[in-house]
Image 1: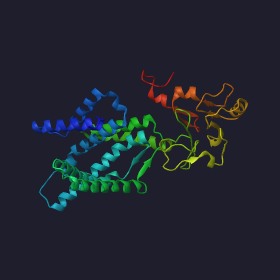
Image 2: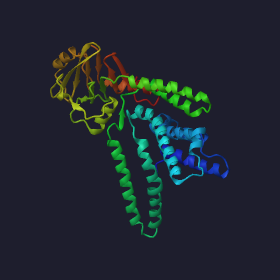
Image 3: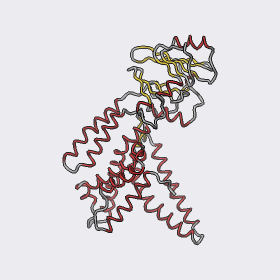
Image 4: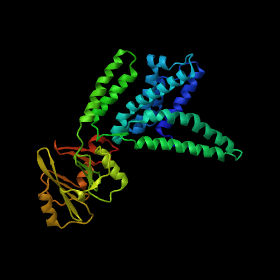
Length: 381
């Protein structure tokens, strides 16, 4: 019914192993449980390792189990004879600490794949998790039971109200000032350092685990100081984004869809509505061509981009290319188009995929370079 997604398979395997552990009188919630679930998923779907679903799911569970397995945390969270106020306070403190650790574990993965991460999830979960566990799920089970007699409608109404409350909490938290951290495209090395550091902290049980903070901090610092690209080009060449450096992004096509607008803004690490090229003083556009100027790396860059599917008169196109440092088009540019530095058209994008260009360092980063020369790669060599 769920489509056998990675988190579902992980949950199913974990539930079965927990039941088996309880039946055998063994400790059920351990990192061995997480490792077994990951092994089963990777045996069946090895490609899942590179996907955010696998990484987010197992990172959250690994961080939670490692936290609660720590002797001091386990001693703090253990049940004891005490008053109701202290008991509930201890439970809420454990829930908040667990949420903070999970947020910290998921942040590098979310920033790497989606360029943004929530900051207030741990606080929201203090209400959202008990609401889901003790109200929504029991009401749904009761409603399904009553549906066998055809009298589940009133309970389903209660479920709808509880879900509406849950969504209200989610929207309020998401809309709060500073609720989302944005980061431009993260370097693979920075991500790898944070993953290694996080695993080191989670898997070791001796004082050696503290050394995991070193690569974790180094990767985080690398990611923070990494500059945003100045120019983004999609793999089909249709969409071009200028990253202005003042928290704004300008798009070549004014009618760019919401999905592509979001993708380009997130890749630039910008949380705001993109501008059209025509709104910028340093850009000149006609129905077919746009030219933009950017001052980067101690020089002025002149960028030429086609913005319509119609062919431009050959001599006009050749003259425009000759005055540009970078020429960009969704179609094949003529042989006479020779920009001073880079010619980006359909044949080149078929080899490189989408591009992110850092003009300060004259560096080009393409999707194909990260995919690699594998048989399943869609990029032509």
